[in-house]
Amino acid sequence: MVNKDTLHLPEVNFSDEGSIRHLHLDSIWIQGSMLVDAPTALVHEYIQRMMAWLLFVDPATVTQRQALQLGLGAASLTKFCHKVLRMQTAAIELNPMVLAACRGWFKLPQDDKRLQVILGDAEQEIKNPRWQGAVDALQVDLYDQEAAGPVLDSVEFYADCRKTLTDEGCMTVNLFGRSSSFKRSVDNMAAAFGKEALWAFKATREGNTVVLAQRTPTRPSRAVLMARADTIQRQWGLPADKWVRVFKPVNP
Image: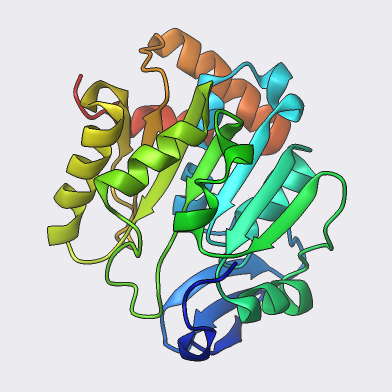
């Protein structure tokens, strides 16, 4: 059940910039993008980095795993996990207008046996027993039209996120906005997951920093990470070799 007043949700629109289509929530801020001629491609660097959980699993097992997105955006991650990685994929989105836009303008397919989009409040939905210990890749990208900081960012929220993960599961979070909010976000994740569970990328040129939290902290060797990065790049076209160069434990 959506327990926020949908009458106050922002209007959804899109703009085209050459071959790229952008999603907006009643503002100039871009909430997601799609390459019109390649709708499953991940356009932005930070969105590609949200797939860094692939470095921590055997690539041969990916099709057997469950992905869950909190916040649909332009459905980039949802489409990639569903259509490219062939995973069980679910997404939770509060705004029904975003879902309609993704289906009408951003080539999101209808639900099927491997895909489900749930209209609801992510803060409440992730408490559903169906997700407890069931998610291998939890991808959190929750921003309103102001894009000033994550909508859900408390220790309690991240603790609930951790409970959804399998033993090998990872959460990736897009952090964007005022610099003063970054440390608070990382501190809250560390309180929920333990600081030894956190990895972070350097910020992109646009100011997005992706942080990854493991359910079970590990420290794979650089050789293992590079080998997996090579496989990820060959199989799915993601720039994973670059990830290894700009991706470090928060607490080495």
